[in-house]
Amino acid sequence: MTQLSVNLNKIALLRNSRGRDFPNVVTFAQKFIALGVHGITIHPRPDARHATARDAHDLKAALAAHPDVELNIEGYPTDDFLALIEAVKPHQCTLVPDKPNQLTSDHGWDFTQHADFLETVLARIHAAGVRSSVFLDPDTDQVKRAANSSAQRIELYTEGYASAHGTESATTVLVKYREAADLARRLGLGVNAGHDLDLHNLPDFLSIPGILEVSIGHVLTVECIEQGMDAVIKQYLSMCATNPLA
Image (cartoon, rainbow, N blue to C red):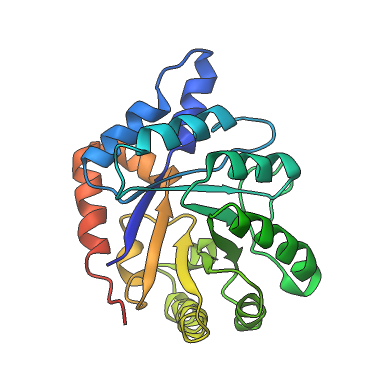
């Protein structure tokens, strides 16, 4: 089944807005873990607007008591970010092509321009014993190029799918994601997905076989405010359990 990784950036953003350690990121990670999630994700940015390097270290220490729960750290591979990955050694590092002041992720890597750079970065991540994933648009050419790199997984950037969901183009867009995911799997890449997935659009997306992990944070946080953590996580886990692996 698909693994659910909860992104805690919005919890960290709330904490940072008040200048003290409340809400505590580790405490919320433990709450989500108690409800059965499979992973915790953070995306520490250079301006530390939400998750921080300290959070990365604290979460890795806390997750030592939960060997079945993975820590995924996302980010643009600056030297500082890569040094953090080498120090913390999360289970997975997801490389995202964000500019330093970018509001949120909005596109995948272009391997036609960045293949050599990414290969150097991937080698450094793998040397630290960390599984790699690269943020990618649902573009079969980019999937082929990613498969020719040393990347172990891709994370399909799903904003395009989420925006189309419920519209006349929904079926066509979902086919594009299915083709990209199917090709990635045939070429030996693991497939993750994330960005703007929610309780309404996730079931249709998980009709695509073999999605190993979905990372969900922004909308999930809002849904938890509206419905309660327990109810929301139960729904997500039920959806994830239906995903066919083949």
